[in-house]
Length: 261
Image 1: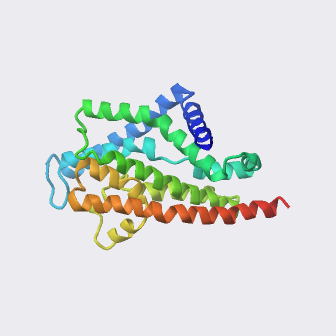
Image 2 (image 1 turned 120 degrees about the horizontal axis):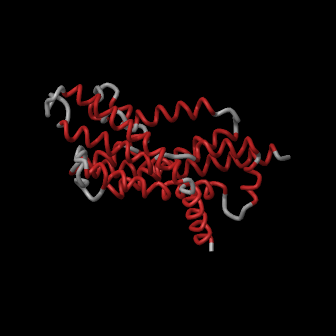
Image 3 (image 1 turned 30 degrees about the vertical axis):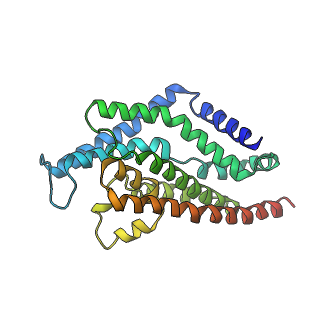
């Protein structure tokens, strides 16, 4: 019964997020413009050469930038901004009265958003292949890695959203999270190109599991034993974040009880 309820909620949110087709198509222009800008930037770095010392081949680099920006359609999270809004508007009171736990509702909403973006994600990949920017994934493990990355992103977004139970002003934190998560996930540059001094810091954070790992598997930057280690890291983050999110939610729920008298 609960599973059917969650399924219905996911489908409902998927339809809600795709109700305004013109808005969806218009938002498609944003990653397209970003991809073109990054490609031009890295074309200038390569200076017409296919290979530059210490860097992946030009075709691999451009494919990486294309895929990771298209991939944001399904890895982008919204619940870390939705939870503070629900709290400030008082909607969380209604959410807590529903038979489904509040965290489950938020996860279902995020899943619905991701499901609603899948057609745009697929169309964008096909168009990028058609113009020769990318080819098919090097490994079929890209799909499970992408799913794991979405789960990690959802759990991180839950934790960030829970902060609003202690402080209602989270706009600055959300803005910083958007910038930091994109950079640390490798949206602008593959993590392998970072200096050796800072690279361990990037790999110690969950953001690389959300973005870099799936794309590196897609393009072949990760393969063999390194690929399996990266997948294990994604699973490891899920194992760590699930109980952590549950613990923080129990504390947050107590805050709601106190505030409600």
